[in-house]
Image (tube, rainbow, N blue to C red; front, side):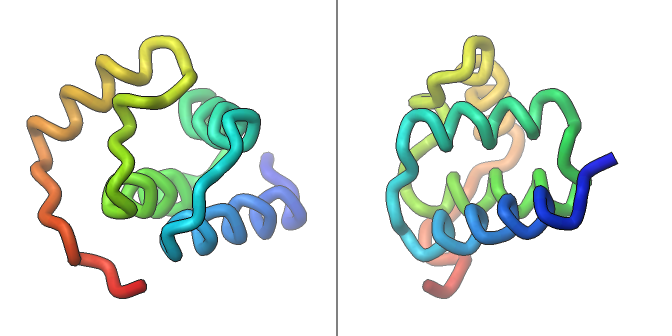
Length: 87
């Protein structure tokens, strides 16, 4: 189970990502690791993925192996229009 501190840290990452700030490769890799291994609740996972997609940097650039294929499939199933989230 995810601790409250881990939830808060991931929530902060979601907010900074949604605001358009860039993540380091290490933070990006750790965030996607938590998503792929289901270490964060589904709501947090979805919020992070949407923040990252709408920020304008596709998941296809993820350093996590296999994420490019998953991202390609997701983006084809759910096309995202720019400007859906207010910054």
